[in-house]
Length: 292
Ligand SMILES: [Zn+2]
Image 1: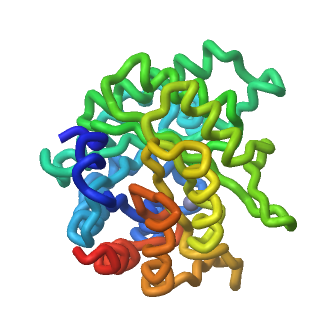
Image 2: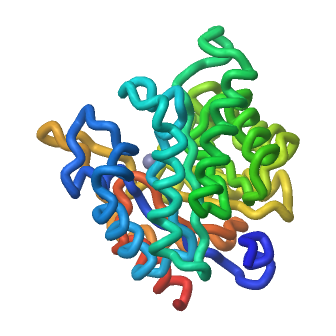
């Protein structure tokens, strides 16, 4: 079933938690290309996918956040873009079977249009190439995540809509202003995001990363106030990261996160998952809070 049809039938869909921090736990070294693990560590990735499915995820994301040709080129892997993304999606589809959703993850390229780093056509083509490979590998959803520039995000959404039949999700990352408002690193507010991403053709809009679950409730409410129909997704970090002895630690326990699930639903959220620092244990508690 298409995820949009499923959202019409059930109240809340559960996504998965972090991938990056899980890969580090399995031995990914600083400076290593995480996406190359799709080729070199297939069974580890399959294990992570299975652990999220077992915890209750209805949708799992591919290990392709930095899988655009532009990002892979930093590791000299640009020419393996299609192989890497297709494999990333195939690993998740194998684990998920046909009953669950596979979301092909696309992250920012690191290039800034405003600075003239890249042209609109180059960005569009880059996102299109990645999205096609993810769909070919078995993704039924494309999730464009951690975006902060509206122009780049908009090109990614348009590209994914133009070249795939996938449902397209866009999430941006906000930080909290002293006055309680929210903006991305490039100055976009949640309200501006809703306007520009709907215009670009996004099916589902939300926020990931940057915040623990408490600030996400405020962000979700602002998104919902702009549109009372579009499905909203929230993937919070396990709290604000703290650097201790050179290690990044996340302190929000699965129980703390799950205790906020009723507030997220009240705010109008339809898909709940986690970002950095969240684990299958977080997803399991979220599922429990939803009565699963
Ligand atoms: Zn994150």
